[in-house]
Amino acid sequence: MAVPVARSQNCLACLRRLAQPFSTSNGSSTSIQTRSKSNVMRPRDQGVVVRLLTDIPKFGRKNAIFRIERGRMRNEWFPRAQAEYMTAMRFQQLGLSPKSDVGERDPAFIPVVHQTKKESMLELAPKPKPSLATAADISRELLNNLVPEILTFYRKPIPATSSATAPSGENVPQAIFGSVSVVDVINHIRGLLALDPEGSRIALEPSHIKLKGSDKDVDRIKTLGYFEAHISLSGSKGPVVKVIEVVAAE
Image 1 (cartoon, rainbow, N blue to C red):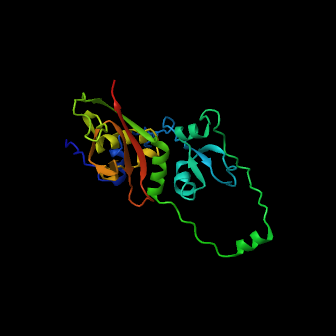
Image 2 (tube, one colour; image 1 turned 30 degrees about the horizontal axis):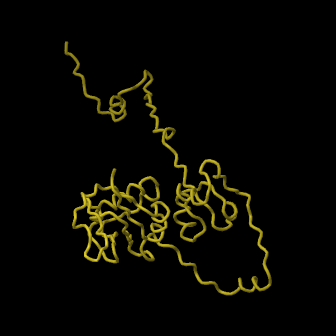
Image 3 (tube, rainbow, N blue to C red; image 1 turned 180 degrees about the vertical axis):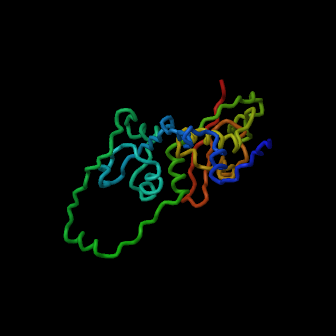
């Protein structure tokens, strides 16, 4: 008796059914449910604390202090001089506290405008377009607010000798072990800017800083005393000047 030879299944539907790894008795496939990544544990950006320099509808009156999105402050308010960044140093300058003097925005605020006839006529006249602050101007403002006026460096002085007095009788500045270079100054400033999210965006290079002592440029500071650091950013309006204080280490 001849044994029937099993033929391979060439039916397309049969091949698809056999290719499915998970199948039920009635031929229906079992789907595998996957779960997308959750954003629950992702930290939320809390924004930046600002102080309004003018009345802004739906946000608050002038001098109001509250948190706002970084993009709105960086792209709209700061370039138009409508608000300023409230850093720890700025709170101290205004005699305010970041814990008790930071409020909330007022979405219902609408400023009341009292116009005279002359003011209403001036509004009809064409107005010049306001000049927007450049990125260099924003960086310059942050340097003024985040970096203190005096940067102190401690160095060990070299013991004075009998020839430490100039022929005119003036005292010669005392020399130090280990000079203060431009790299030392820029690293110190970078450390201060790194504490602020906006300040950390500023890209400072050694070519941006010049050290001045006795009305002349110096490559490095080699004595105790007071000097100046001129920070110049391309495109900004003038340099930011900070005082370099070199004092004797105890």
